[in-house]
Image (cartoon, rainbow, N blue to C red; front, side):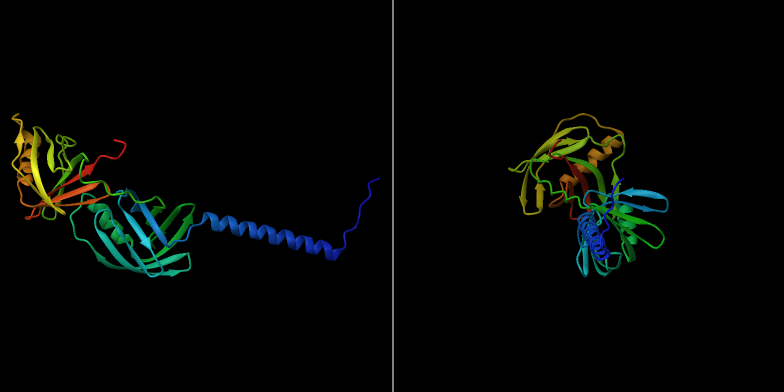
Length: 268
C-alpha cells in the first residue's frame, strides 16, 4: 500500500505563494517584452475607414513623445500636441501641416482627418493601432524610416506632373517611360518618354538649372508626345528646385509647374 506524507499547512501555503509570485513575475516580463511603449517612432502602414483600406506611402510616419507628435503624412509634414491616458488612449490636437500638392493626396487627407481627437490604442509585438470613435484605424509598425535616395546617380522615373495645386499621374500610355539621371558632375540624361535626351546642368544647393537639351528626333504623338512636351518645357525652367523624401523626388519650377519621380531602390 502506498504511503502518503502530510505536508504542514504553513509550508504548503508558502510554497503556493512562491509559485504564484514566480508565475506573475514571468508574465510581467513577457508582457513588457512584447507590448511596445506607444511613445516612439512609428511607420504608418495603412488606414481603414468607411469599409476600405488605404495603404500608406513609404514616407508616412508618426513620432510620439509625452506631449507632442511630429511626422509625415507621406509627403507633407505635420505637428500636433498629444495627451496620453496611460497606454490605452491618446488625445491628439492637430498643429501645423505642409501644403504641397502630392500624388497620394487622398491618403494624406484621410490620415489628417483620422489623426485627431481621442484615439484608443491597441498594442502588439512591433505594432501599434490607433482607433477612432467610429471604428476607423491607423495601423503602424516599428519599421525603420526609408533613407533619402541620393540626388546624383539615381535613376528617377517620372510618375506625376504638377500644375499649381494639381498633381496628375502620367497617362497609362506614358507611365514608366520618362526617366532620367543626374551625375555628380551635373550631366543629365535619360528619356522624355519617347526621345532620349542629354544636357549639362548647373546647381547650387537645392536649385538646379538644366542647359539646352540634345534629343533624338522621333515623332511622338498622343499622350506620350504631350508628356514629352511638358517635360521639355519644365527642364527649360530656371531654376528648378528639388527635394527628396525617401525615394520620392519633387522638381518644381518658379511658376509652380513640376514633376514627382520615384527613385530606383538599392536592389533595382
